[in-house]
Amino acid sequence: MTVSSPSQDRPVQGVLWMLATGFCFVVVNVIVRYLGEDLPAAQSAFIRFAWSFVFLVPTLGPYLRGGIGARAWQLFGLRGALHTVAIILWFFAMARIPMAEVTAIGYLNPIVVTVGAALLLGEGFARRRMLAIGVALIGALIVIRPGMREIQIGHLSQLGAALSFGLSYLVAKQLSGIAPAGVVVAMLSGVVTICLAPIAFVVWEPVELHQVMWLGGVAVFASAAHYCMTKAFASAPMTVTQPVTFLQLVWASIFGAVLFGEAVDPFVLAGGALIIGAISYMTWREAQLRRKVTPVVNQTKV
Image 1 (cartoon, rainbow, N blue to C red):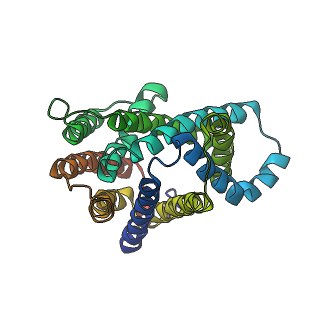
Image 2 (cartoon, rainbow, N blue to C red):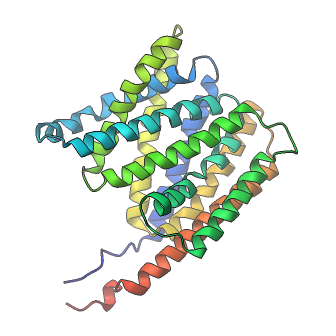
């Protein structure tokens, strides 16, 4: 019997799935950027997650009938609250700063997860992680360039979104050992929809059918992106797929320039490249260390 999991030996498929992931996420950004400030951020986010909950609610039936423990409810609630804050801040930032800058700052999510895992989950804080975090923070400073230009509220909003998303993913990691992945996603949509409802009600403005349909498109493409990402991770190691995510920044720059007249900022591309490079290095080093202690499939005896 083998000790290790099946080998991820389909790098081409992994890269293609990750390309599709990036494309879907960029489409999400384009739609939200197109809608702009026509609707309050909380209202747009509420409609988007309500769509997702409608799509995913059928997956909850069997799980709910089996009963949910108090610990799971606490984690579902905590993650929903964190994600609600993140989503509002992200929608707010998308309407106010270029897509490429939102994308580049968003690359800090894995760094937040790494720091949080070390401080909160006891996963350690090795030198390689400290180095990667330092390089990523330099990349973020290059993107934002404090002191060289005016820092807009959209930049601060996206930094807050990156922090909140990262904390949400840490809670999701805890939930992964309690509930199936589909249930975790569906419960997230449900809790976020509930959390957003009173906020959206307070700021509610008249909404047109085409806006509701566009936000439904956001839900579809966001779900498709997560599906493609899962397939990418199943097809190839993250050391192969992680660098491909940088193309999302390139596409965001192109779409932003062509569709919305946003200038292509070389500092944003350079800073984004540094952040992705740091994340890719950290991922590669983790994989190397795991390989030293985990038998390779073809070396494991039956």
